[in-house]
Length: 136
Image (cartoon, rainbow, N blue to C red; front, side, top):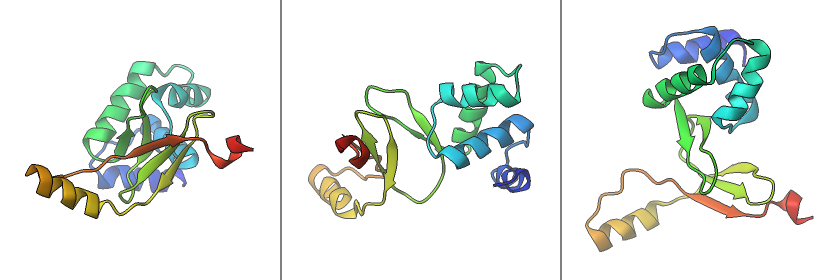
């Protein structure tokens, strides 16, 4: 993704285009899932005077505009990713790697709704285990 693509995406979500926001988008595009600390470390190389507060402020603004998705990992820091099709996550408990997996949760959602009279609007599923690389 080049700077122009990042700028267009930010504008589509009514987010002000700044060099820091473009860099955040490019880092997430390149790395998939990142926590704020890792974003900060990577962005310091390009913006030596950037603060952690600036990263938080920009990430929170992008989450509010539903441009980024916050993935809450049990017993770990939240990671962020660019919005994409609805999916779940596989998290390796050894290396911390995160993979996306597309699951049809409609049957589960329907069962929950019928059993509890609760209308499910969103399903965030995180599976933890050991990835194939760590199993070797």
